[in-house]
Length: 178
Image 1 (cartoon, one colour):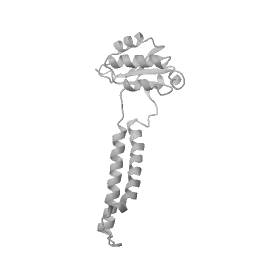
Image 2 (spheres, rainbow, N blue to C red; image 1 turned 135 degrees about the vertical axis):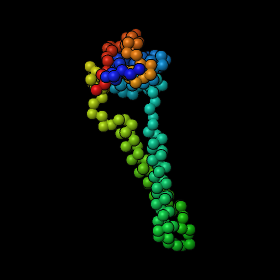
Image 3 (cartoon, rainbow, N blue to C red; image 1 turned 45 degrees about the vertical axis):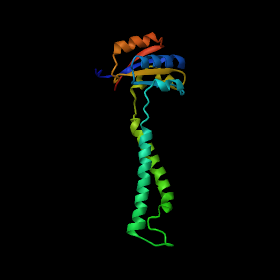
């Protein structure tokens, strides 16, 4: 069920224990599209908030492409374009290629990591819907927020609000999508 104009429902908590308890409860109730906003990392949240680690495979692919590019480039130069017999070694002497293969592996992986992180994070994002939540600026100092997103298949605004108020948050807010 779509909820146009609604990004989600957020709750503000005073301490990390309350936030973790709320995230655990929502996870047990079947909600998967949630995000927590905290002033510092809370390791207990990792098992309840959806893991969005899609960057590692991209970096691996970038590194492999870098290695293959370096090998292909050097093979072309040494065997096809400018074959030179030096000391009787074979033209395709791959140990001589290792340094450049390593360097291009690191280059391609780091460039993939940089642009992959920007793309997967949805950046540049000048304004996030959570920025309009009252007191959200406190998320960087002493408050803890949990937002259940409207794109969750289990999302029903009335049910989410009812469940969030059972967690005794400081406040519960509708987060409008802009």
